[in-house]
Length: 269
Image 1 (cartoon, helix red, strand yellow):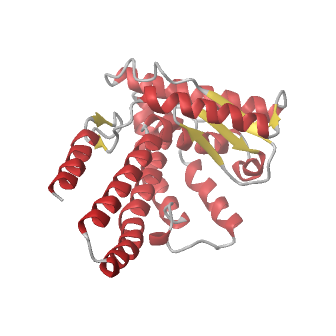
Image 2 (image 1 turned 90 degrees about the horizontal axis):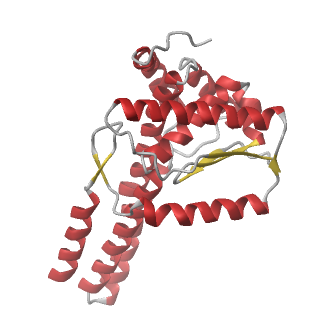
Image 3 (image 1 turned 45 degrees about the vertical axis):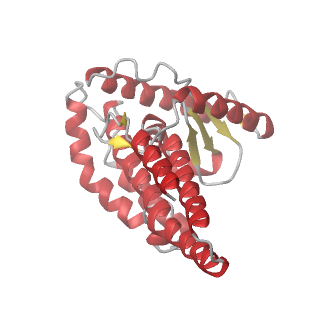
């Protein structure tokens, strides 16, 4: 049992070695970019071969344009705040996929996909910038590697419990309680925290890129309307509720504008 506790302690100690430049806080991350990025890039390339990528249209060009502006703004912020080489291993790529799913995502290292189904809700370039800022923020904050790290610790805890508990009945009860408890009490709040962090970072970056941060809350009002009010309780979800996001984004918008002025950006039209 002592060896298991020592292993968990080592994992936790190693996980606190990387700092999120946007928050200044140490993160749960013990997977280096050199390990995560190649796999993510390969998965992204495979996804593109298996789906209908839209090329050459006005909408596809807009996705690329917005992505480049957002990632450039992120680079400006990082350079100005003491992280000039932070993005050296990133390979930004922005693709529009013909799919009615209302979603977009970003893999570690900057590989982004927008589904065509989200574009009507975006209602133009600024709405795309809201979503793009959020997705780019996930990549900037290494949320993918952090989720992998959290998943590893969750597995280590399960293994430790199964080794420590010799009685089969008690072990079965532990597995049931641990599975539910670690998911609802740790993993889901961890994921919601990432989403909230990405909302805040994304709002800041989109404003520096010259997009109006006031539009972020408006986009999420449209997302709420599109969902028809169908959503699990927040504590059972990987994402904050629509109302929570709308409230947060409304409160943060003036701050994002103020941050943008530090980079000479005052016009958001």
